[in-house]
Amino acid sequence: MKELVIIGQGPAGISAALYAVRGGAPVTVVAKGGGALAKTEMIQNYYGFENGISGKELLERGIRQAENLGVRFVHGELFGVEFGADGFEVKTSEGTLPAGAVIIACGTVRNVPPISNLTEFEGRGVSYCAICDAFFFRGKKVGVIGSGAYAASEYAVLKNVIEDVTILTNGDAPQFDSALPHDTRRIVRLEGDETAVRGVVFEDGTTEAFDGLFVACGSAGAFELSKKLGLETDGNKIATDEKRATNIPGIFAAGDCVKGLQQIAKAVYDGMIAGTEALKFLKANS
Image (tube, rainbow, N blue to C red):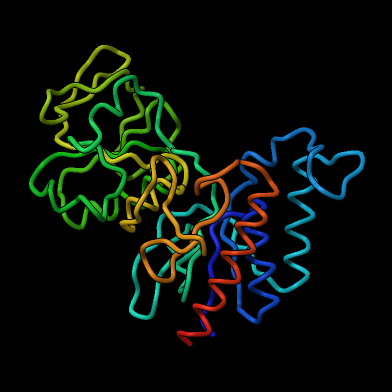
């Protein structure tokens, strides 16, 4: 049976992993950090803990439970998910993971830098997917906003198509090879008109022209993945059916990245559905 790769190690991701691995699927969970749950001081509305439990401890217990059942964990930056010759390829800072099915369970965090008018230019020169939109900027000058491995990965994708690419770290220290062309100045706002972005204004008052800007802050989250894969969305959530299947066969979503209450009990239920349905998909396509 092909591998099931789960993105996210919160309640939805771990629940999916438990059901899938117990059903016989090889399972790998990709995550970096514990998300919002790890920062929750005390949970008192979840079944089975008479005195409550901290989010950090609940997270750690779930991870240990999954590890004891044979789930493999890859701790690194997520760059994206692409279609492969035999399913999917999950790109991470630790390498590429082949997958027969993927479950997205990494919450709803949208990694948008605090630039005042950035969202006004989405679709008008501001993009969240290098592999999707690089083609439209051939022969032009573009920037990648980000300071980590994900930004460097998007830079590499763009350089295959575009000659003039610069990484804009927006005031942060670069966490990538310093030989890559980059600018560490903080961005105050973007310049442009009703048709397209034209450049960025830095904190020192200077302006530099850019024809396009690709946002790649932190790791690729649910929003970025939906853009890269062409997943249907419902507002800021990934659209799924009652089986947590997306519009792309083999891609499922669970937890806070789909519609519904943002509660642990609901995330665990979502994970159970997504895990069992992904298992069925893998068995049917093995």
